[in-house]
Image (cartoon, rainbow, N blue to C red; front, side, top):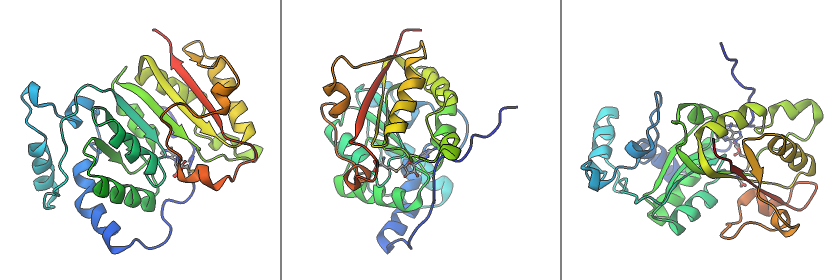
Length: 257
Ligand SMILES: C[S@@+](CC[C@H](N)C(=O)[O-])C[C@H]1O[C@@H](n2cnc3c(N)ncnc32)[C@H](O)[C@@H]1O
């Protein structure tokens, strides 16, 4: 039997939620949440009208009636083949929602265990009107384990908890087991985009990915790791500059199987 991974995150709840955020957890999250168990079929999460599955409103209503909440006006919409991205640890959701708004043709799954972060993300989703986002409040490793093989085009891991003390390195999200899981769910040519402002975490991640024959580091010159990739949206944690170095931007491609 495989062991549960160590907890890679800190607190899951901070200050009391504002009434609007608490309300959105009740009313909006159930419509956007990935199934709590079983295989997560991405096409079923983001229904497409041309496959005869309806515009998504039906899905919302089924879920709403099952869990006994009234439908939220922000219903899932069809997304037209722009690829599927996963953001692990989206914090307050600023990056996730900005990317979803910038790429309405793509599908975004965000995972975050921090309740206040999920509530903040729901507020951004509602304010933006983005309909191409699904969420899971919990551990991303549980979601990845339930995704089908080769189902993702892009995985963002932006400023993960650094766990800088050596005795805590085992809590870091980036571990050989996570690389196994990512190698399974990424399509060939799919990418992992990782950023940190902790030098040892950058080295750690680089070492794990570059010794793994399933991935290749997409860097040809120093600016490829010193500067963010085109289209990057600054994250809240990034602006805090809490690390011990300038941000390091690492892109790894999943090689063909
Ligand atoms: C330092 S914060 C950065 C948040 C955001 N990416 C940013 O840059 O502002 C790291 C986040 O990763 C989340 N996290 C840690 N382990 C996780 C896991 N196993 N699954 C999903 N999220 C996780 C934490 O709860 C936290 O919100």
